[in-house]
Length: 208
Image (cartoon, rainbow, N blue to C red; front, side, top):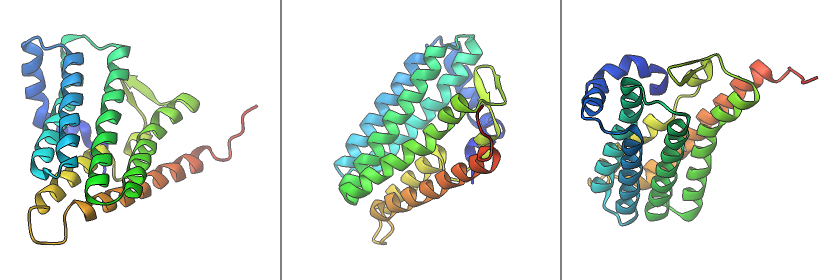
């Protein structure tokens, strides 16, 4: 599964909300900040074993994260700062949420591993774009085959967290302790897939 690669086909599900926010004149950077704030609240509630509340705030954070780009492109207010701020906000939320779940429901080692693997899985893209280059940029968005490589990225992580948070309230042994371990494992395997892809394409190219 790679929902990021299916972004354009899925966009019709949430694009109207982004257009509504654009018509209201909400600045895209404010929407990014709200995503960061809601994600931080999600981490707080997960850390204090409020799984369903944490899942709700994570869902809202992810929703606002989808909106900022739509609003920026709809209003013509795309900016290089906005693109960077969006990356920072995403990684802030991911690090705090995964770390909070890891510490609260598993162990410090699981928390550290989850954060590290998640960050590497994301930042392999900008590093590759900077060192190797990318195919093209459309309306401020990088378009490159690497987007479609891997099977467990940010959307899949958020969906898994929400599902395991719901299961946390059942009597089944399928709560967040298992969930954070599986998320870490799948993210690691997806990261290795991306590394293998880059090696196959560029491993035998040598700089002059």
